[in-house]
Length: 233
Image (cartoon, rainbow, N blue to C red):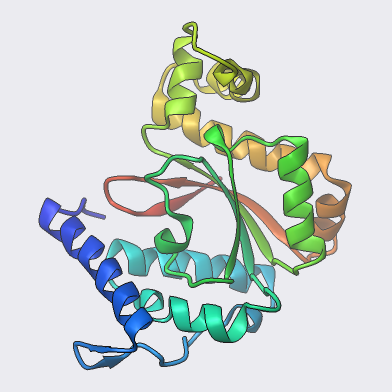
């Protein structure tokens, strides 16, 4: 998929700004009624395969600058998610500000249960959060998603002295460096796959649901330039 030009990226940002502003004021933008119901509701996604398919279909819409969900965020927040949430998917992503998960998958408020930490690494707190999403909220798929030019992976690869507790991330990511070497994209993909495997095997809640076919745990890689997410096998 081709990378977006600066003009296309600017168009995407303007679309986001206009849609959210219009929803807040109840205006019509370009003849579109921003209060129209979103076609795909989270609770309509009933199987792990369907949940993964919806995530990837949403990413294709994002990568092609076709983002209908942005027109409905505020309306859905007010009408459907004040008292409860029914996300169909969970995503563990890096904390990087260039990875806005809901936008990347063209999903609205309440559709994705998002956990974020630098390097998208598995910790007890992350496991507990994702277990809650799976066992209590009913998510059907968990995507552990790395991204291009990841600073956490790059810092681990360089192994230099860093301030504060930044280095606490390094032991979690080092196995991917050992496996893939100093190839940043390869190491980032390896890290996503290692973390997904760790989650799948270390959580008794999630591993049991995987065995029963109630949930999938997969790894992915988000390309900052093209906007495309690819699954890491």
